[in-house]
Image (tube, rainbow over all chains, first blue to last red; front, side, top):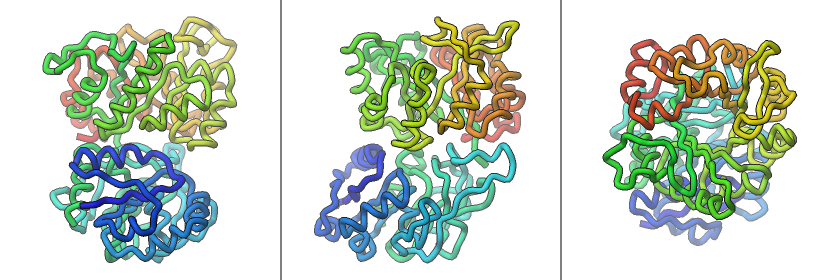
Length: 196
Length: 251
């Protein structure tokens, strides 16, 4: 199985590559449209800022490449947000794979710290991505912006408000949390994605 | 609900952990990666690796260790010690660290916090503060608590928050190593003063101390070293205890 990881200007992909290697897959880090189209699975990871990332993708035609992928695709964190219609981070139009907008957490009291950082629970799980997982399992989040609960939501979490921990439309899967940093639960989710 | 975090801290010198350990099952006792893996399997929520090496050669060894940790573990980890400029941060992040902790370098040149936040995001930047309390209040110290500064704890905490730090790791020098509990009063004042998470450090000797740091001290995370390394408190027992005390914990 070939797994391509989208190479772009988003940091911290080393952990994604490492978890794939631990699961016995040798990933290809690439921005080559041909390799991305031919891979069995594509992972669109990252940590970064939305408007800079979109500019980078558009300049290289990667926006069109990602939209046109037909194999299972997994967006992670900023990857998930970029797959939506618009992001409040940098007020930028994104890939539009999900017709929903990305908004910023608004603290309601002093204890509501932004970014939302740390381990939080998943619930309302509904996807093969979460096979053998359970409501209440913890995963690791680091983010200031989020996708509200919508018709594409396949997992929820709650911080200040309920929000989409994961979304799915057809072959496009995306998580707000970092499965590559979420211990054995996260590793199970990546394995489930590879098994799709 | 967002869980309170338990964070073991590992001091590393020339690629080896320096404090003793009761993990007899390790293939190579003293290997920070092995110890980190053991903590991860026991349920540690994050790890901190502190480089206490002075030499240039040792620094290179530490970077190699960071890369191994990132390859083999899948929980977040912070690295600290000897990070003085942006290039050091970049080196640690590209080796796979999630966050870096800065202390003396931030006191000497506070703009470093702004630079890290701007280049890599606030979530990467943990500012560690060592402070000692006397009749004039809490004073910040440099160089592992050896050199006093003219900065006051709460003023400095607000400044690092404004400059874009993502978290504060507060060590009370008066409580560190004494094992009578964390500096809960100062922690609670910190939590009320800033809008970023606070990691409590210094003073853990019993499980109740962790509970108190979260309830009385309003800390978001608690860090300890020797109670974990010497096996005085096991992480699974600690987390079960905190859960029973109605603290939200990842079990």
